[in-house]
Length: 301
Image (tube, rainbow, N blue to C red; front, top):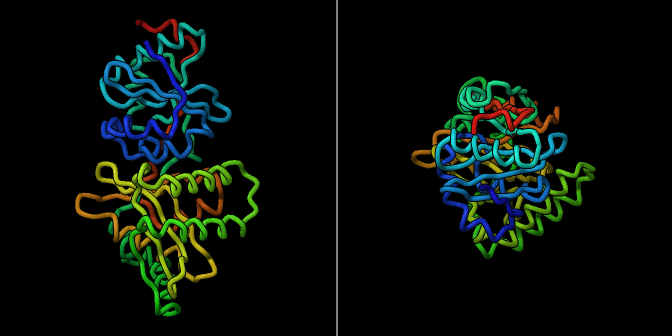
């Protein structure tokens, strides 16, 4: 029987091992994404028979289940159906990757699936973001060349513990220069501060771009399987080409042997962000679906 608990930061060490079962390249099945957005989505967790279950509350969807980590899908579906049946609540799964959709709907034949375009992840070849080779990436390469010509004294290096106060000060300046009303923006800033405050616990990969010894931008991410996930990326646009330079340097530093792809996550429906992510020419948009089952008690348990 599933018994859910609110997800707290101190749960990260004991749950981290489950994420290796994901088998997916979507960002939602990484420790970073789950814990960064746990408060905004009121994430709860349960471990049952060697599998990790998450229940979240996405705006507009209500209580929703992600696909569990570990174990076998039929048992996962039976457990979630039984949980919802006892509470007389509909079953809702999100996000469901495209390659899991058919198997889920075979188990729940009366389910309905809706594609969530604003949540599709942008997946790139690691080599493309490392070097911006070829005609299609000439625009990004030109920005990097502009940066190199303008700022002779620059460097990129891994964030060390002693760098955290400087990175935190940069983040404060970055946030103060923007006046975004969206709750997700403020949650993103707050959780980035949390990561910096608990850097060893989050155990993310961090790199910072410096010009004349001053931080011009930084990125935070992690590797799961063959994919480098970029969770946090902040840069000062006053430095021409700094975002493109940060993208390339982060990729070169952390997309090492065995890492073939980089996931730069979704665009949240923001037109400017969508244009930017498309300009890097993804090799795939990782589709995500919401799947609902109106009558959980009709499922064969």
